[in-house]
Length: 163
Figure 1: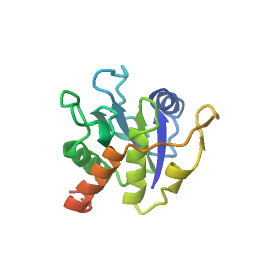
Figure 2: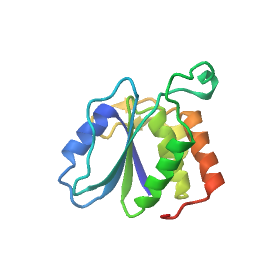
Figure 3: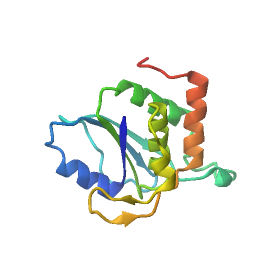
Figure 4: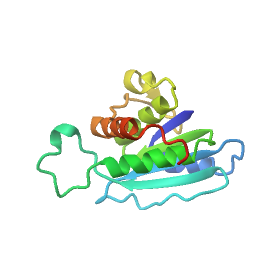
């Protein structure tokens, strides 16, 4: 399984410019901040087989105390992602975006790669080239709260295998 990790803007451009590419099928996970809605909701198309939109803040473990009024990634979000992954095992790749494409989306992308026993080192170790505009951008910084919650839910529930 492959993943493509984008910022919102890059994701929008990628999906727009590839909407008529019938050779590859993908599923899209759209991560948006509750108070900063990106203003666009992605929908299914011929090549975008499914869309999951989640709203939660980019908060790390060290900062969650005292932030009870914010929507923070939790077990329910993790369960939705696990269901979505298992409902879309036939796609060629997953697209994951958050606002900047650095923290929340890379944590989910790393999890998906590991879920399918694929190499995820590149997310932690390397600088990458933006697939839309070709710029070299800093490496990802997977949000550990998101990543650890997903791993814990996977451990607690097992691989769901299209349940």
